[in-house]
Length: 463
Image (cartoon, rainbow, N blue to C red; front, side, top):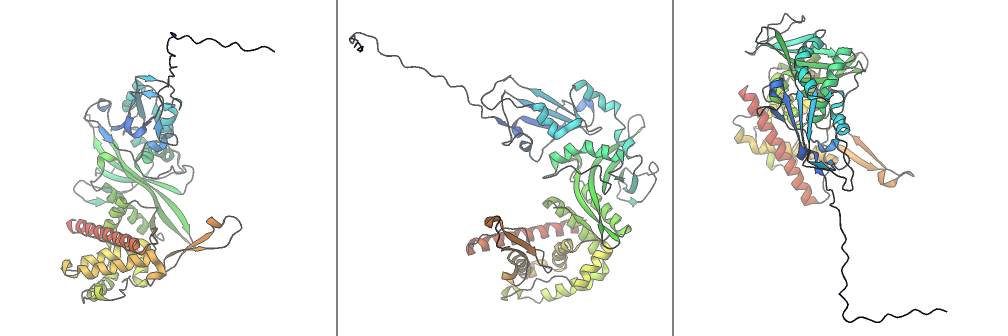
């Protein structure tokens, strides 16, 4: 058997060198929100100009992979211009270098096409050309539409059913989405809807149940040629309601950022309300309204309800009872809901559904309390009672949304039935089981609701 030879140690040998191990830089990525800027431009001169209108999307990260980050780029900067004339878009992508740091290199073109689809133009010169080649895009698309109402700059509202004869500078045009032109227009507006409407999804442009209401401003250019500027739009679905009626549901509404906070959103709501009344639909509803839109919607409805005589006796009766005082000292405070007859009168005549009317009812009561500071404690008491009834249901003397566990062989942790009673519109709020935390949550809801009522009342007073 061979034997290993033992080497004699050299006392003067050099010390052992440490092996150096190199680690490549780990790519942590960059959030889309941090490297993308989007501008809305109305002429080729605004592209790249410092005064271009910057828009703030809801959340760009959601369009880029699961974690909302872009990988593989150093010094990445993306500038996107969206034309408010043709609604085409162009992305100027700049970066210093690319490298795969373990997460690959993000395909920017396909990621941007998730948002902009066919509206994204590859070449900048081609994009700039659209401002002249498609300068009449909006005018040609709406030419077959129906003008429902137009509003002059001095506030006068008029109706006209013939396009081209209106003398006002703002008008609302209705188009059926199933129509090829309307579907084409909406397809160009989808990117803005995705970017600016929280939680939005494109509607089915082949479904004739959809209607597009477009807010248009008409002005003449320097040559005297009429120009049609799209200020905003809303997509509405027409449902069948048994036995012989229809319901309108507002699904999307957007006023383009440069024209927001100027009353155009409220004007669109007014026009839709008038359509619902004139066509005698069952009611007008809104699909999951965001807080700001709900504020606008309620303000519009309050102005109409203040002029609606059939409910004034009910409002005055409730206000008179409230002015008697000492409600806040009682153990149980009633919710002061409107009578059933008032709810039905409002639905039949103004097409305001029950849930929305209950929101308006509290504002009407608040407006009737004069001086309001004298009765504020009791008013807050009835708001508190209503919030408790909505959130806690039967535990607070009323019934609302309930979750009941039921036996199941499928998945015990997911087996439940959720139901809502006919007597209460329960709030979509998950309450902490801890009593102290529950009271704090309820108080926060009450405070927010009272603040909202005050803001709406102030806005109505200033109209």
